Image (cartoon, rainbow, N blue to C red; front, side, top):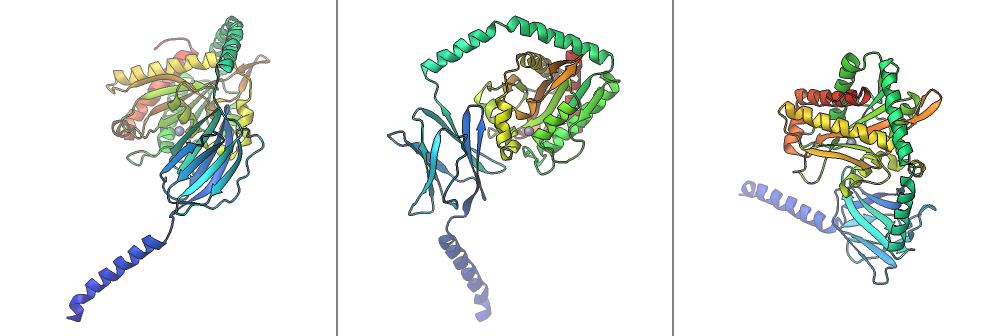
Length: 410
Ligand SMILES: [Zn+2]
């Protein structure tokens, strides 16, 4: 009799233990780190969590003086937050006492007309708050006037960018050209995590290696080709940019794979650097790809406060369009019905590299970043698992680069 009831007793004891633990253990999640950095004209504050992404809500007080972020079942250990001197929109941050396990964080705002965006990001799990000034009609017309005044030297810019191209062609024809390939992420930074556990860092590396071989063997035989990494090692974004400068790169190509919370999203897109992003999603993507830099902090300000390099933008836009079109067309010819997401721009830190020297003259490096597909999409992720598909992608990109350099359409 006793023996028969024994398993039942164990079961009861275990369930009692679990119930009591879950009742009295308190919040499971904590904010383990808070970071501050500037991104373009916005100021960003990021809360990193020890566990999974919590639910959250936020609101602005009626007086528009306070902004409050409420995070469910999460402990905030920090008592005080020290805001960097370069921050203008938030005066102070305070934790408000609550009766339950939720945390309420209140931000005292110094400017009333702020645009505040709050969004969660994964790997590492975090919530990002972005503060920037709302553009009123006055500043908007000021910006327009600024653009108008900039249009004047456009002709000059176009001339210069066509001379960049001519120089580039001659340089590569004489076997003195330099291409730097940049497989995104690596080492402790896996990049996007694929549905089939195919991490971005490996996909990027493999496509870049294949691209390296094709360029070296077929199209740019005598010229120099470098890679920012040849194996699964961690290279910071600053190191990548510095490397490109040191090698005096004419063309810089960064290879990445995309990911989205919208699992249906698929396709290929190519980016060139611009201070502004072409869409909200482009902006977020740049933010995610720039994430490595967050710890560097102040460096980002320096990079983005640089002057507008119009020749570089014009030239980079051209190679971006040509590579994007060629790659998509080539894959479709090979029966991969990829979606053409087009050419876009966003403030990618890694693309803000360098100038190169040609006959004592400084010219900008033309730089692009290709997102070769969505690892979060079932079909595209499965394609990217195939060696033969990655080979086709490398071939398509190689054709695009070649047609830009030698001015011959594929
Ligand atoms: Zn990436």
